[in-house]
Image (cartoon, rainbow, N blue to C red; front, side, top):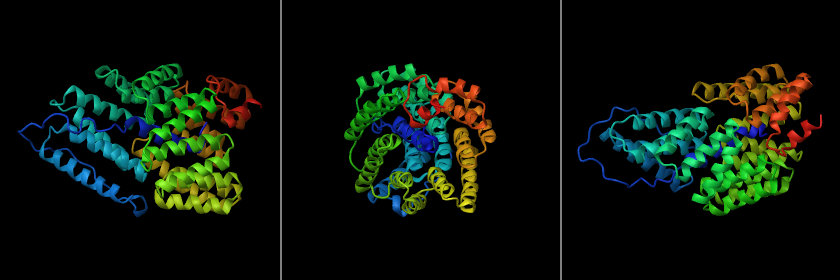
Length: 411
């Protein structure tokens, strides 16, 4: 299980599911008769200086202005609405401002989907993108429903396979996810399909195969692009998860050579340093990552460091910030049940409160191994070993080799 890293994992796989190349960007001609749109277009938030990435930020601003003006001038410009939504999604990843960008993306996508003039190609693209946003919000059942509806319009498209793989994994439909991945690899072997193959290999106990597939994903990416940095980050996390800390750290550092200030690499270096007992250096890196973007995972890692060093007041103060951040995400439509459960179990040593959140998530997706592992850990901490074993049995259905799962199996 990914515990505090779960946010980053879901954030990342949703990126690969929903960043669809704008293959329709120049498809078709706009109607000569334009009508004024009344749709509300969300603001483009200023990127912090450290994540502007030179010309990349200039291009984003130009694209935003172009899409916004096109929508303003033509209520039926559904293509621009979809491209604007995809821009919002990318900015959510880059800046960490999920609560602002995901609702904005859903608003313009729904406007496009409900527009009477939209054709099947654009409906497919809008619904596929919407399903990706729903994945990012941890709304997995709705993502699966939306993805299945999109697949009816274009069942051989690789991108919709990616969405359906992610949704089925999160709902615990692992055999279905494997079949879809095999098909996606046949249709389009690329960074997106290799990354999904990697994850499915890992949760089925093939750690070596997971590394190989994720390395193929890295090789399929272009150096310096965010999706390539993400693939490298995920490869490093696999090594880190199974104890190869030096290798993981080397991978994270190599990300920063091509994409300076990539916050997740900076935060991951901080996590490795903490595991190595280099707490002072770890704190420095984690605070550096927090200064780049307000990603809650960095705050959680730093709180763990404070707990490790028995800096109780600093930990409690940071936990209050974390609770506010998680609540803000929840208020913007982001399901944070597992994150709250992890917070109460691992940081606050309050398994009863953790249980209330984990049970809510179990009610949504009882077959997911991460959810079952969380419940097994909670009941083990409470002292109810029999119930813990019930959930542990389901957590083991894929024969994953997560170290914390193996450790719990020995109890």
